[in-house]
Length: 346
Image (cartoon, rainbow, N blue to C red; front, side):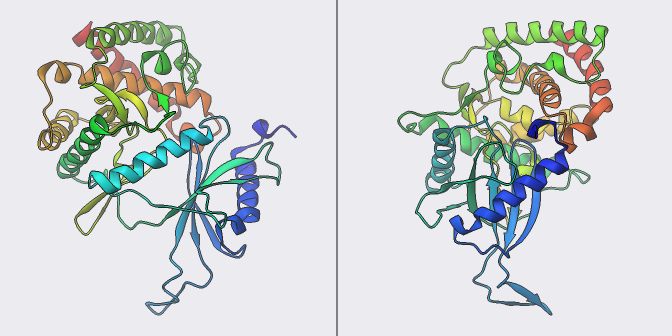
């Protein structure tokens, strides 16, 4: 059996079976209720103890709180890389007032466990997190206030990043040009995106060259380049009783701070209120720290960088539901954005 040639559904059956078999490592029973929350780079599950029963609005055994287990995909992060992610999350919680999910050790005291077997070619890392309540902002409603909120919490993470002493042997992905649109891309080459024709390739190649030139000029000074979340979408922002909580640090790594704004606008670049959303994010960000004129001038560069990086992700994750849902419309909508970028910044 070639695991990579299986459909997504068939792959997920095997991942879940391996997780169920490994629940005892986390001190959980095999008869827990398991619900998949998300599948992209990793597969994330909500785990509900059978001892927690909702009965006529009353919870029996409320101490059996739900949790989340994230099963990592193969060959994306090393064990050390995951340790560094968790260390930053904990530091943000403790030092920056940015609430993040709390990892829960397994029975052996280790936070990072492994699951294996049941058709998986190799063992996979898995981490259990405490469940945190909250709702992500609704993208179908007015987003000005949520983007102000998002800009502010993003700035708090950046302020902490600039002052935090990285752990020894720090290991996370880099999100510079070489690792996004260049010769050593983390998510594969944008040219492999499904459905691109010759004209699309030529247009996007011009964009890639312009992005590379402008980012070289923009530079990687410490005030502009450091440890970032790298996937700061509204879906990863949970609001509960007025408190803003941040989840999904799986892509965090070393990159430009403005890339976090671009990731916040993923799949939204063609919205008519895009300028207002950018202004709202900047308003919130400036409540914590400034954004200078040179940075503002490159916001569209980072938006185009992120847009093309998603194209690369679609090519290397063609089996996922998200890539299938994006499909042709995402390609079609990218071309006028590319033309507008070349016209305004070329």
